[in-house]
Length: 138
Image: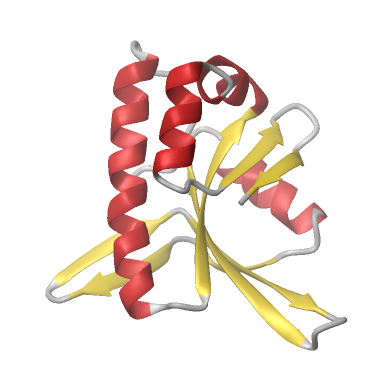
């Protein structure tokens, strides 16, 4: 199993505060003989619809030596997970969880906006100090 991101517990706490139930930590996804691990699986009851919404959350800190290198790795991982989930769990939506700083530094810039749009990224933007979700981008 891969090491947890530095914001793993922060995002987990933020999701719980937002009304989500953590169902998997990590969420194992399988395709053929390969097992991959998305950081978290969660579900939330949507009372008005009397249905459940399920998500998978990959957490990225973007604290490496190069934000572009971190972005390349994160997007590659996101696309692999998304492709597998679309085949194996069509009712689960994948989100990339990033801090407000990473959103401002990367996804508010032209390159980040392009990547966001072209790859139909779903983001959870969180504030690490107060452990709360500040923005959902779907």
